[in-house]
Length: 442
Image 1: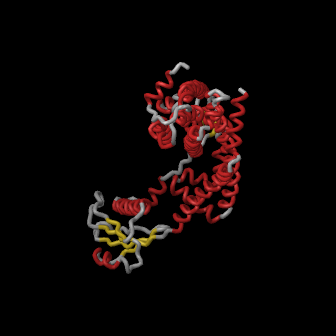
Image 2: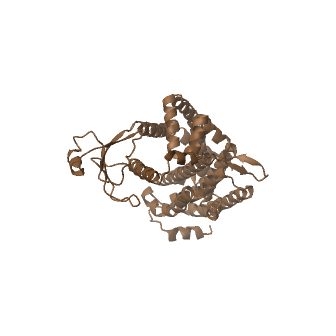
Image 3: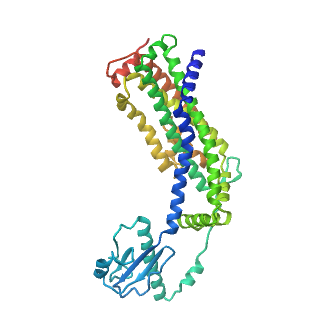
C-alpha cells in the first residue's frame, strides 16, 4: 500500500508542478467564459442591430394587403418589374427583393427572395412568417373578422413547474435550468473521462519507451504501478476540476454583473429571450430580470447533491475507462499504434454522449434512459444527464453499485494485460495477442 501511495504522490506532484498544468488551469476558465460571453454578446447585438431593407415586387392582384415592416426589417413596395429590380439591385439601396407572383391565397406558391447575398436561416424564416401573417390578415378581413377581435381571444399562459418528490411533497422545478445542468454535466463528464484517460495511456507509453518502467518494476508489482498511476492522475483531474469550478464561478459572477448592469443590453437580452423562447419565459425574465431569473431557476436544484454525484461518477467513470487505457498503453510501443485499440473503447463512450444529449435529455424517465444509466460503460454520462430531472434513490444506488463492480472488473482485466504488456518490446500487438496475455496464469 505504501508503494502505491508513493507512486500516487510521484504522479500527482510531477503533473501539478508542470507549467502547462498551471497555465491551462488558469487560462481555461477565462477562455471558456470569454468564448461564451462573445457568442452571447454578439448574438444579442447582431439580432438587435441588423436592419434589412427589402424591395417588394407584387405581381399578385389578389393579395392587396401589404407586408408590414417590423423592427429590423423594412418592406418597401416598388413599381418596377422583377427583371428591372434584378438588373439594378447592385445600385439600389436594398438588401433583398421579395417577389410575390400571382397565386391563390389558399395555395401560395412561387414566392422568391432574391439578393446579392444568401439570406440566413433566421432571415428567411422571418420573411416567411411576415408573408404568412399578411395572407392571414387579408383572409380575416375578407371573412369579416377584425384582427383586434382575434387578439382579444389570445391568453398568455404561465406554467409553474412543480415536482412531487418521493415523500409526496411539492418542489419547485425549472425545465430550462434542469436541461442546462443536464447538458453541462454530460459534456463535462465526457470531456474529463476522455482527457484524463488518454493521459494515463500516454504516461504508460512514455515510461515504457524510455525504459524507466523496467527500473520501477524491479521494486513494485505491475498492479501497484498501474493503480498508482491511475489514482495519481485522477487526483490531478479532481484538482483541476475544483479550480476550474471556483474560477469559472468567480469570472461568471463578475461577467454577469458587468453585462446585466448595462440597461440597454439587459433590455436586449429580455427581448431576445422573448423572441426565442416565447412569452412565458420571456415574461418571467422581464418581470424578475435576467440575473434574478437565473438565480431563481438554479435555486430549485439540489446543486450539492449534483456536485457530489458528479464527483463520484467522474471518479468511477474515469477509473473504469482509464484502466482500459492503461492496458492499451502497456501493449504498444508508440502512440500511433493505439488507434485500433482506442476505437472500441471510444465507441460506448461516444454512443453514451450522443444518446444522452439527444434522447435522455428529452425523455429522462424512459426505458432507454434507465438502461443507459445502469450499464457501467454508459452510466457516468447518462446518469449525470438524468440526475437534474430527479432520479429515484434506488436507481442511483444501483447505478453506483454497478459502476463499482464494473470498475473492479475492468481493473482486473487490465492488470492481467498490463503485467505482460509493459515488458513486451518490438512486437506488433493484436487483440489475439492481448487475449493470450490475459490468459497467462503467472
